[in-house]
Image: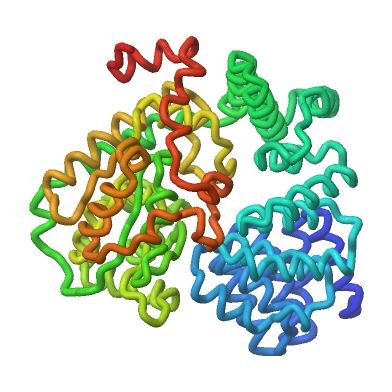
Length: 524
């Protein structure tokens, strides 16, 4: 009979080689031959995390925790719940694994990434810092530290961390993009030659080029060309990089078309059955890069409001209650079943998932997930006292803003953003959808013009607060003084006062937008 030590060694070697079937076999053998072993269940949990079978991983990790109190197990439970967007449970298990009780650099980094994923960047930084104290040779640790520092508004520390990551790994393409995304340092430098060298090396390594590497370097180059005023080169760099990624993906038109069509065709009578919940959360939604973060910062600076950031909780609650079999949180089958959910049950589950975010004196929670517009009728049913602010920005500025932004490359939400005309198509359907539901529920939904907000911030902010049932507080328009972390693409801009610099940015790219203008029916 193989010894226990040998079986564990073989399992760990198989995990390190990503041979998860073999690792699973070794660990099952451990349990069969030696009885229940916390370490075996823990490693089985790791295997299922790697296989993206998160519910199974959670079950196994709880089994391990029941056999042994070990902070390492809590680290990976935190990771699982963070991957599910369950901030409440993630925080609970993070509290069981403080920095002082973790000694392995990888465990510390894993916890930091989990906390970062749910927007807790200040807490994440403590874990990253300790990981780097124990092992300063890992470029990924520096990169992860830099990401949280950036979202926490610590831009100098972020720049230093990304620079260190690149020194350790000159071809670390994510760090190259992140460094460029911070904008110019005090001493202005032209990084184009450095990025072109990295691009050449990465192309030599990959045949064909790695789409994700091409995407990051292409976006970084585009930002550098923009800074030099070379907008044609900036657009070309984007178009080339996005084409490589687009070629890797399936067509997204059918998926998005089906979602929008279903929501647009839902009968108005669906709003006649609503829950009895009196809570008044504030939902801020809209196309990405349309000003949702600005509105969230205005609202969250009010004394009666607390922000939860970009919460996944409503969509996750819908998914859990529909129990549809797909791995995606949002798909047509889930939306079709959502109308059958008891609105009282849905509202209660959302409120239970977010209650821990509320603070003394705060009466309203801001939920700022842009794509919550896919759940508009269900929010209205489950939370009839909620106020919904939907941002509308100039269509060309919105579309070019989406095209210029490097969104999460692993999220199906953003698969449309690799093609300019696909972005235009989504914009048109979004615009039609939100106007449709606003006409049906005008007292619950405010369509907020981004241009009006930044050109008339006092007047529009007063109207915004009034719509949300909030008394005027002058600090709300001083968004640059709102020091809370920001986990969005606007992490740098929202540290500034409200301004109009982003209006008309599409004009820099006018030569490349003729087809988009035709699609949108715009003549200018």
